[in-house]
Picture 1 (cartoon, helix red, strand yellow):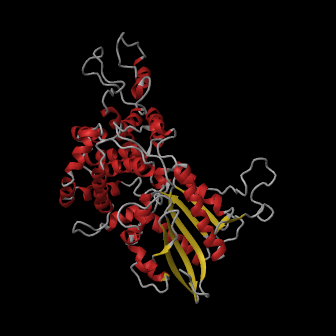
Picture 2 (cartoon, rainbow, N blue to C red):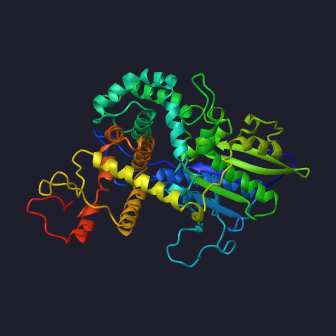
Picture 3 (cartoon, rainbow, N blue to C red):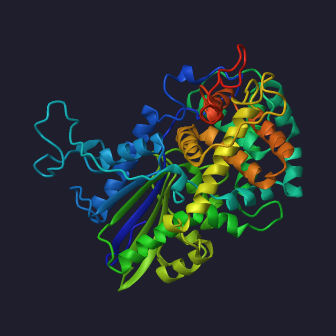
Length: 523
């Protein structure tokens, strides 16, 4: 929409989904395993790079040419870019900025700004990409990024999400999709549980293979199966994330824990601008469809803006701060993909808006309900114990998952040569610390699917801790539903060599050699 002459754009924020990618995983009988793609799981494609290059052009047109918010020369005092700590998100941010601070497309003509006009790249370097200015992209570790990773490192979020899925009305919904689960379990090569995760995980794989790359599908993935699978996910996914549905109200706390931290970040930036506490005029955030959906759900406009399903690749949510007659207003826009212009959806917000401008005071009042009131992250000095416990729980749960996999055998378990009542002595504090640090590094390198499996296992571990049989059974159910590649990732966490008790036993027992054929001290 076109603002009246006296309106002035003061600051802008955007949140976008990464561009087109390869699948983030597969199912056991999938004909398109990781080796087929030639790149790692979840990698940004060249098409995805182009999508964000085009979105960067659109943003440049708005914020440099139309509104004059930003100068054409990059300055870190004006622009800050932050990304989720995932390669495809970081790469999308870089592709977006490559055109945002380079040239722009007007009709069919490129307008390139010479190096003399913007000395932010070398003009004499042989082979330097024409007009490309390297723009810093900031990020933080995945498990600490509550703004861009919806619900991460939050046991309460996992508990609420699990409880919502266990509601009788939703269990009835899942039961009504028995044909989908039957077909998946009969053809996908695994024992998949009856859950929303199974449906959304399978759809995520097939959508990339079928819709994005137009690959031939196995005979069991008929058009009807695919359409029914998509409909089931569209009907249930927003509900399990907290939206009202199935005759039940929204779960405000769950919405708050998933999208509230990103909303809080935006509100903080607005307040800093109003109070003169920042010089930044443009904040760009590169993330996933999950955080876009979570943010729109907190604003109560997801279905109106996106409709059923997830936001598309390279979709962008805009939040702008305008000034009119000395008063501040908020404008919200959405570009559904790289081919579509932005659409103003300010009037769909649950507040009084005029000419696409919503009074800042009303916007801030509305957001209070969905912004977490506690600290976003605990200071290290206040959380040594809780942080250590979180790490130990996660590592213990992942290790239990590894040991639950077929063929896994715990290193250091009693052997026939040591007697049935033998049990290794506990590790020293230093040995525990070293083991946990090594395992934590490995966990951080897992694919999103493997991390999701670990997250589910962690929730089970916390819910049923003390009941070892129940924990083991639940873990077996979870690990049986993941793909072979995810199982392989979890299997890679198994202790090598002596295992986590091997070194300790040697130090504590004098390191007598195990009898020939014993597995007690070998991996």
